[in-house]
Image (cartoon, rainbow, N blue to C red; front, side, top):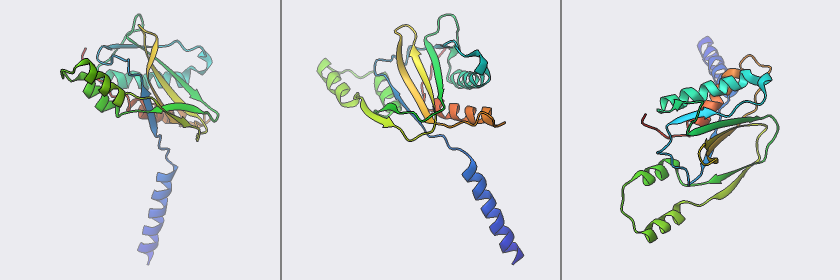
Length: 192
């Protein structure tokens, strides 16, 4: 009997521990005009709020580690990509887009298949639509923007609903987890 009670108590304790962990569900959308094969370096947009630099340093370190593992080099002088990010602390109405699978789209763009101009236009019209989706069910959000520095266009944005407790000693861990979850969606590899 004691073993059953102990097993039950252990099961309840483990399930409560799992329920208390936050799971950041990340979404993203991308700009069809982005030439993702061309980008090799990245840099960050300057932080206009130096008083909150501890959180921003955590985000930048996480993004740098992730992009570095994908073959990108950090270059603050003249990067191919500029990275910007924002933590929203209130409920936000955010518009994203329902698009084709990013991996499929990148693979199709990198294939060397000879298509006539008309076939290319038809394929593009079929695959490259911007179907709006509104995200309103959140009490905060982390958004990361990837900008083509030469053209000045946002070519990719990733986001997750995230409400951070900035008074918690675990806030940097939570910010790191959310940032990694978003950057896991940026599946572009480069060869430097």
